[in-house]
Image (cartoon, rainbow, N blue to C red; front, top):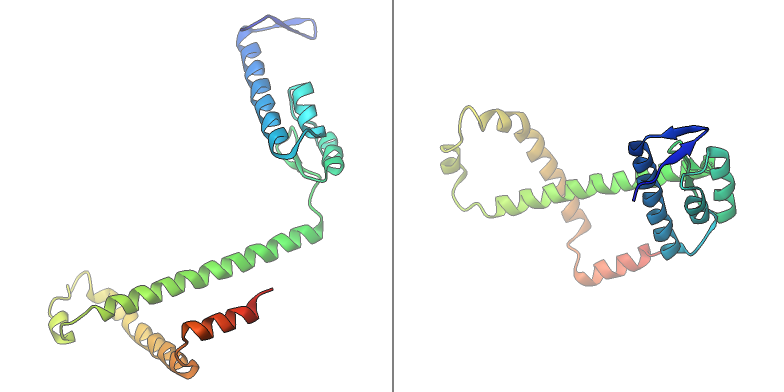
Length: 177
């Protein structure tokens, strides 16, 4: 339902009133979700009572009261993170990226070994089916490095010895925090 809204001694258009009503209902829904998840707090009360987000100073105060970060009217989260929090976030992000990088490499290794393990024909027979335009440039560019890397991997694999499920569980117990 639309109603006429007055703002500073002037009548606001119905379209503007509809947009304000929509924004209020979105914020009321957000407040309800916050209350359902974390219980009633100063931020959800502010959203319902004022129908808008707090300004940055208000958001910082509310965030300190609730012990969390809240979104202000400018779209930023307050209170701002401390240098220690930012550094910790960077460290976690870097560690996550490192883990993802290694996971991608392990995946490529497994695909390569699995794929090559399925080849049954002789390399000479396979070579006669390599396309000179599409396949040869890739092979020329990467073969030496791939063979050298796979040889280094095989040496490391053999140096380490083959692990059984028992040795894997023993080593993972030592890695637990």
